[in-house]
Length: 638
Ligand SMILES: Nc1ncnc2c1ncn2[C@@H]1O[C@H](COP(=O)(O)OP(=O)(O)OP(=O)(O)O)[C@@H](O)[C@H]1O
Image (cartoon, rainbow, N blue to C red; front, side, top):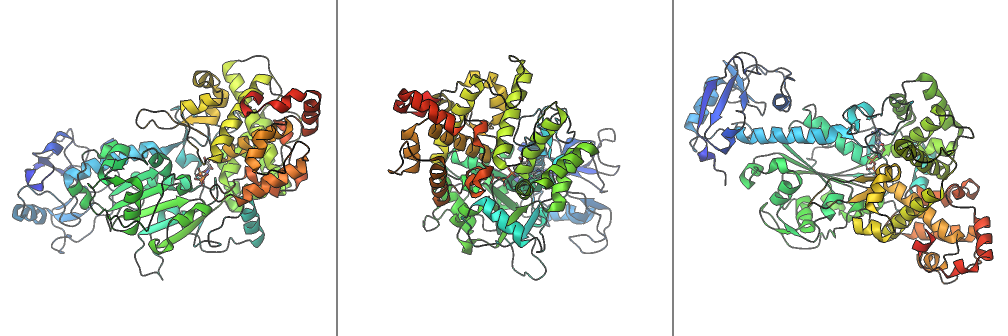
């Protein structure tokens, strides 16, 4: 347990040669656990410092004020604490001398303990490392292919630099409709038609800043946005800016958690403090007392992926950060302000899941709307420095209304960029894809082809051509995607893969499919979990699988899915698609993503045969081979 009285502090002059700060810096040496680390730096002169990791992580360097925070007089012999407050040297030393707790080395202005500051700085470094690279829905080889220079590996092999590809998003205050359970593509189309891009946008980094006409404090923010619109990227950018010391420096500790991660401990009992320690090991040394002096910000990303049951009517009160309870109870108490009442909370969600948080608990609702037309172009410009390639891609997007509308969604821009880049920079003949189905199909074909190139597999195939083995793997993935989408699951374990006939070892060799389509999530509790690169890819593969079951007369799977007794082997394709659409739109649990939206586009645009054989031919084959009627399970089909 940490006690301020354990600290024995003295002011000393730093050795010239070790000094990362300019001459005149002073440091504290402390007789405590914390003293084993580098001494906290007291600077007498602010200024950007990028020579040492530790220094870079310090709270942002602000202009030296003229007044001492303590005596309010002109600063004499100024020194600053590492939390950024300025004092006359005499003021701060006499404050400490007279402090009730001997050895107290906390900042008189904000109470931040200088030892604690070191840990917070470490945490910033760790968060910066975590957020500066993004996987962009693919592995670290960069998804942009040969022609794109903006998205390739940055040389570290660990993904793309967020700051290099991050394009400003259009975020507004309020919710365009109350809780919108409508189809996302329809929402986008409506938004596009209405040209609602007229409100005042909020910058991502200002999400907690009240506008001039708002007097009240903004403690809880709920940010909505459809699938792939950039909610996770926004929280990553917010976190990175904070960790780099450029924004929101009044926050002393930012805790970034995803519901995806929290799901993993949903059945366990944790205290909030322990939860921080487990998910952010750099905070191991932070005690309840230290937490109490921090200005905290919790970010919970992806409420729609939550498997917790957040019950705001549950009256179990948890007000102590060391008190154990279920994660759901901890969260509801935190959101309601019963636990750490001054902590800021930011939750992101797809719209249909946002109603899990009672409006009375939320001070501000914002919505990520995606890219405006200008931002769309900016996105592609960042990715393609080759002017000719850039122009061809932009003009192709503009030739297709659906493509152009869908490029409001950043993830769709990414898929489009990946596919078109590949097609335009390799010897591909044939029409460029224009529909969503076409685009996702090409995306999988591109990924499969890249897998073959990487592993020098077999003969070269044209991008339209899949080998039987490729088809098999994709359909197994489709089955996995479908079965887990049915139960609302997006995280898979090895057992889940195996149940669908996917061998993990084989899968990793099959990395064109598996490392591109799957990514290994951070290993918490030593168990590797997998998920699709993006939920929309899972949704697409699930749709492909269902279509495959239809064309292959796998009546049982289709019937179970539609829960429609009238379905039989004579059901026409149009009827099947219509029923699937009705079922998708009815779904409360999983508002359909872009892929399940296919039927909301003119059916003539749907070309699912790219991956699954044409309906007619398969039906015909099935007629010629009646035994296929008897296959009860999807796995034999795969
Ligand atoms: N601001 C941005 N700049 C550049 N690319 C972006 C941006 N936002 C999103 N993207 C692209 O879109 C993809 C999906 O974004 P993100 O994961 O943030 O969406 P999301 O809203 O969290 O989706 P979901 O609700 O499905 O979790 C990213 O992997 C990236 O390729």
